[in-house]
Length: 453
Image 1: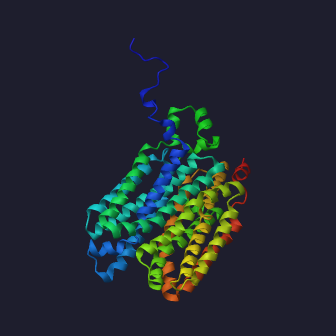
Image 2: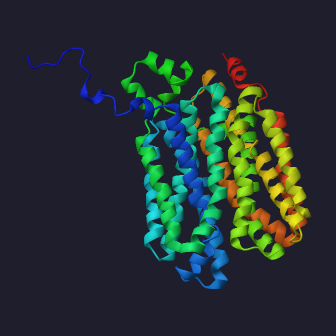
Image 3: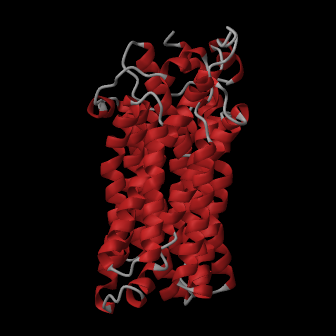
């Protein structure tokens, strides 16, 4: 008899190689963190390199370098700003987020390849557009994948890892870009980008979403072993979703989270435009010394992000985010004390930058967790899930921050001076504490969710 035994598994349901590991919390979160770091790094690595590459490789006249450099950085942020809501809506429409993630992967490859192969200025613009699309997909779909994957009680903790990875990439990109360019030139920078992108590509191809893993596992096994809450199974196969961006923004908790993230990124991005020029003009530092300053911000911001998320999961997101805004304002304002190249001033500079990175790490992951809690509340009340759309707005806020931060910081410094700039940015980040105190959730995760049951 040629028929297969009744208990044989159909070929299309045979589990992939290392299914359990490739669909585990550890591997999925590691992949999303790597993707967030890669896109942040690729955005930032050309910040110190771009003025030199524009002249040497793309033959831009010295008088036009500043315009083209600002424009190319702005194009990246604008594409992320406009693309994130669309990516979120499409991703919520799909049963699996893999197709959107694969599209982002293709854009990443295209952006790096175009940068490596072309010497035409127009193609450099195309490269930044492709990188911007990739970033929009990675941040929006990546954060939605975290929401799909982890237990609601741990959402802030894991969001902290992903967002810290992004911040680490943005802050460490200028350091490695400057060092690599000074040692080996343009192609060495592109090679570094390609190497990091290759590792990212490998992880993304190996990752298996929880929704895909369920095809090879019983419902009971997924609920018991994946770490998902039973209710989370529902949004792994979402119903068709509506365009919900405006209704989401009408929710004060969502709007507060978006504003808080915007404030956080404005402060971080302003350093890209203001700090190198200030340190070169006032302290006479080289690009390498300037790049080391970014590590003073990046290291504490990266390490403490998950800790801030864990605190948020324990006591609720409001107080960590509130104190994060207040405490970030203090060292920002005190940076006005830096005015000469002495040993004491240099140590004070590093201390204030490290304090800024430490305090800022308390803002973003609690707000990302609160955004998740709002959507969970809406779902429990019968509303349609829109996880990716909400994180599309989150990504829009980050993109808006990368656009506004350098412009705001540069405008304040050039028109009003260094002291006025530190006051302006300090008060701006402190302003985030007001809506956070009024609207952000105060209960810990379990209590927020139980209130809606």
